[in-house]
Length: 428
Image 1: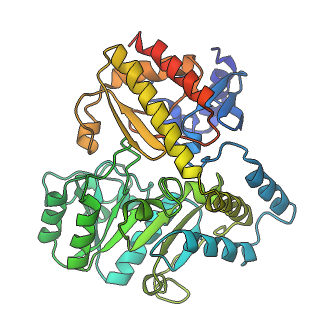
Image 2: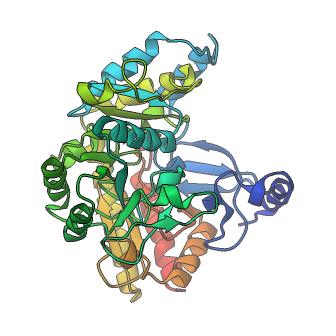
Image 3: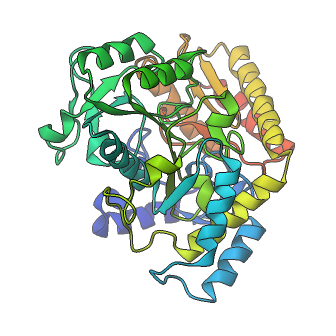
């Protein structure tokens, strides 16, 4: 494929945008080469500025669960835009989507809309601290909850130490209140809790991780976190920015039968437009201003275009009783095809899958946390990525991201992808 125009556009962007991109992973630093500039998208396909068609497996990092330019969503946005794009005042549609979301997700009574997943997670931690009167939080290495200061922390020197900043601009004072745990390691969590008695406000986790590849929780892990939180007056926060309304109507809480105290949403809930949300039971949410003392605000929160897109998307998902079954069946079909292609070419690998999320890791060991995910052969992944790109298949330009399946993918698309992987595997 030729990417002459994408290369020229990237050179233009570098002159006026830091690194030429508005989010770092887009820059292809992890895989090398020049980013692809998208011109338009429809269904399961991206069309770049050079006229190439790509089968899309990032789907805007998750929200295009029914495909790009999905007609009910587009129609809803167009009709709403004709009546104004932003008011900074309450609108009826905010209540309508809130009612629908609360009806779909277990264990929540109220929801507040914000503008991004980062903002949702940041606000949920502030709310947890305000509700409990405690300062520290536990997060897990490899889980990404946005770029708020509290989350940009690297691991400390041991199980009971706090982390240190891993980005300039994040202060040591902020870092001291963030404790790092190992994903899928309940003993590690207990050690942190015991070493910081009555100081921990919340444990925040991606209940199915998507930012170190797709990593499911081990059997009993989420249930164990629930018990630890209950025994120590700690709030359990599920970051379902990726998994919410994707793995089930009610997200991981429904899928795995574990209740969180606060749940964060994004991606699907906005139908592809910038949006986030966080939700909890009455007594927690009533701590938010204007009812309570915990302040959170946003001029564009509940933006009518985002609400229209989100309402259309959630309505479709709520009314289609087969969509999650179809998504999982397509994901299994692709998983099995990739497995066969890599095995037949003796490519060392591990594949993780939950619902319509999965990831390929070029290592033979089970991938259960960030440390094991980091053992994958990144040079192999780079060749895999660029090989697939040459064959017209677009996956995330990072070995530490999940693939997202869309219902718009046909089985012909899946077969085309498997054929491309068979071809690429011969050269790995």
